Image 1 (tube, helix red, strand yellow):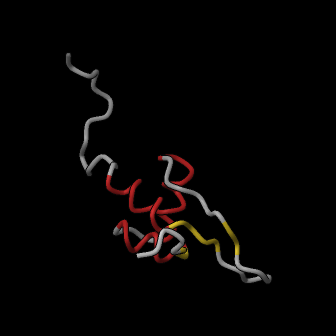
Image 2 (tube, rainbow, N blue to C red):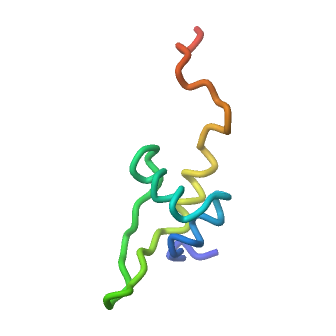
Image 3 (cartoon, rainbow, N blue to C red):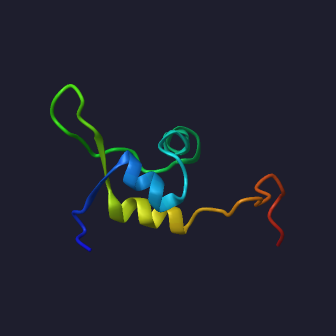
Length: 73
C-alpha cells in the first residue's frame, strides 16, 4: 500500500466500519482525518490519505469506552 494512496469518504468510512455520514461526524467531533484534496469539478469528491485514516482508526477508543472517567494513577 502506497503512502500516497487516497480514499474517498465512502472508502474511509468503510475502513472504519461506519457510514459516510458518520465518518463526516467523526471528522467534526472526534478528530478523524480531514480531506487533503478535492477532485475537480462540481461533483468532485473529498480525498483522504489512507495512511492517516488507518492510523487514526487504529488508535481510536472502542465502542463503550468510558472517556468521562478520570485516569487512574
